[in-house]
Image (tube, rainbow, N blue to C red; front, side):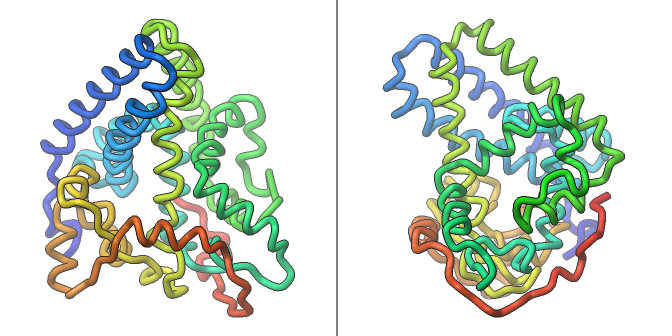
Length: 307
């Protein structure tokens, strides 16, 4: 199935985006009127569920599958990504680059090589599970405004995945990234002030998404075969949650058919006889940590800039 043969459910996407944004606004308003414990135990999990649904829409926009009109598609991606909070043009380049680097030596967080620091690789993987990956992405807003050079090729070289990511970024989008980063700070600053949300309440609620999203970003890839397209797995949750998250857990099917909209993924998976295992079980398995390997998988697209 090709993008041309798979209709984009853009009306549904737009409607879902509007509903999700309204719900998120209501959650933030509530966060300013309840105690911190309520924020941590009730609002943060709710924010995580809804914001993961919003991220699924951002993900569609990254692949130009939110709306058939590219301008509308990108505008929707920019607006929704403000809630992440991160610049859409940075998220998109990172994600499309992931489709090129997946399971290669440039992006394999579940393994380490003899010359690597085992301690650093464990800290990296457990940091992903603890939500630090999201925190780093969110911090990129400040970096983009204060030290944009750190987001350029060669800007940071403390590990191989970061260097590979920066090498793939297109400098043409730097201005967009900086403008979107400014919009992120203005929007969230205004939300805190206008909705009268204590900063700690605000941070706890947003972390409800960060904790879940960060771990979910690698749960579909941990321990899979080291192949750029097939190095993923389809996972399952409850049927309703799968729908709310726009079939994002049909991840292997998505990697095999990245130009197909979310609504068609279950049919493709069924036609291929693809199996699905428990998302919770796969997530728990990640806590075993990275393993030592001597098997090398070269990134065939190293040096390619994401357009």
